[in-house]
Image (cartoon, rainbow, N blue to C red):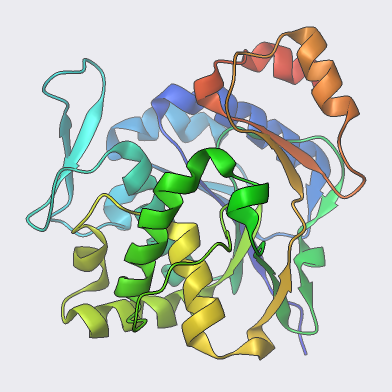
Length: 293
């Protein structure tokens, strides 16, 4: 059996450009075992991100990924912000559309699997992406009772996301779950994403993207995870694990140099990257120095 071909996929925007540049530098220094790093951006951001392109890195316009009827407009009340409008539901925010780009990229890319990386991830240790596949089975991130242990601050949102995921993939009854699939530096299979989108379309009786755009209750990790766990019935495709390869600082005040030093010092042996959420306001220059980049 030939090894799985992996891509790296990052959905970004102009406000995260410096963080995305830092991610790219860390990939170039530490990461092996992948074919292409795709950076997915709004069409108006192509020129800004184009300098990050290289032999193994492509900048992809969302217009090549999203349906024609999903279009960005300026936010009517928040200067500099964008909304995406469609005929199928309320306007979507950028973080919703970043998820839709990932679904489309995963379904249409040449590679057989992808590793999803947010813009604010930074690799700090060597990482072979091929280690996420073993005997044809790709690492599948799932943490039983993880909403209590891993993401307690998202419990209310998770309940809504989990119920919506259940309805999208036709689980009856759409029972809740305490398992979390939400993380960064996690792998998806192309064939599974295609089967997932086909199922959503069949359940909704309309294109999958139209069904996904119908509500702001959207968590791509939860939709993919519940499909694999409760609907796909293909254990030969996945190797479940609760291993968080990226240590994430989800919320809180900006970290200063001392705080970053402490955060890095407490990394587990299995953790090869850090994710300092951009909305915490931690200075990318400080992160760069702490990571030795």
